[in-house]
Amino acid sequence: MENKEFEMLLESISEKQVQIPVDFSEQDYFEILLDELLCTKINRFSLYLRLSKEKFIKIVEKGQAIDTGQLERLRSKKVQYVYMAREDFCKYAFASTQLQKTIIESRLPNEEKAEFIRHTAQILLQYNFERMITPEIYTTISTGLAKHLNLLLSNQSFFLHLNKLLQNNSKLYGHSLAVTVIMKAIALELKWTSPKTFALIFEAGIFHDIGLARIPKEILEQNLEFLNEKEQQLLRMHPKNGAAMLRRLKIVPEACLQATLYHHELCNGAGYPEGIARSKIHPVAKLIAIADYYCHHYQPTSWNSSVIKGQSEDHHQVFAQLQADQVGNFDRDFVDALGRVLKVKSKASNRK
Ligand SMILES: [Fe+2]
Ligand SMILES: [Fe+2]
Image 1 (tube, rainbow, N blue to C red):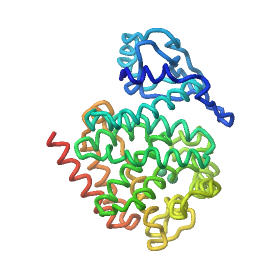
Image 2: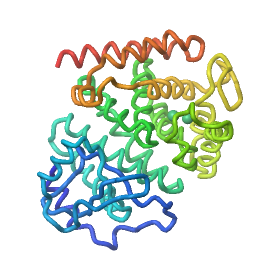
Image 3: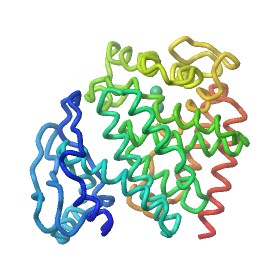
Image 4: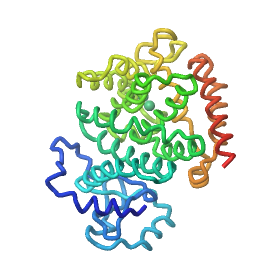
């Protein structure tokens, strides 16, 4: 992606405007999907490749002209991500957020606006989830992103955006946004349209797994089956920890705390942390539960073809599995509504 306004904006950002937070975690590098990198003719940021867990090498020097051939070669080698050091990523996140305002007000087609919103949202969430959650971060995310979410739900491009988010489903930022998009689609199908409900769905969806932000990455990146009992116990504490983290901010609505705390409860009482059933579970928690299942079970047969074309066959397989295996776990009305969403969106994307 290349954008003149982005270039001008970066020029205008002085070091003074960008405050590097002192409470940053030890994370030094942040990822960006190579295909979505916003680059200018002269690169403003050094770019790195990840060789192993701890090892990164610089491939593009800050201040040099971008070698588009080099980026093409990386693509042809199936490199998905490039990395920025945290100070550069901080500036990149700031510039993207500023540019978002211009893009939204521009005459660009909605499809391009939606692409940009998705990119900015992922950057912002990745950046913020690495830091200790604060009232300011909570407010920035919940007010700054929520109003643009509808752009990701338009019928024709629904699967395309969802698939791109699911590509990063193992990362907290991609997963949270994918869950939120599915929740919002189900809610619209159920005619839950009040602004208050929409705000709650957005906040609960984005922050439902915030308790995972403090769990070591080695545990998060492991397949569940390979975790020992202690690690599994730690993982299962994330709803309680997340609700406690959000409660400490003193600005999060009680309903959002309830939804976070109970998002792994199941209608038949077989969930955690408390094993409560059906009517005792907050409706938004039940909404998260089904969207969460969906995201964790979606594995496209081929990322390249599915992501690019936004195909929906894989989605129907996941839904069939959800219907067959999970009787009693989820709210029946929500399951039916999700089925209708997939049908409507599939028809729309086939019409393209
Ligand atoms: Fe969770
Ligand atoms: Fe989740």
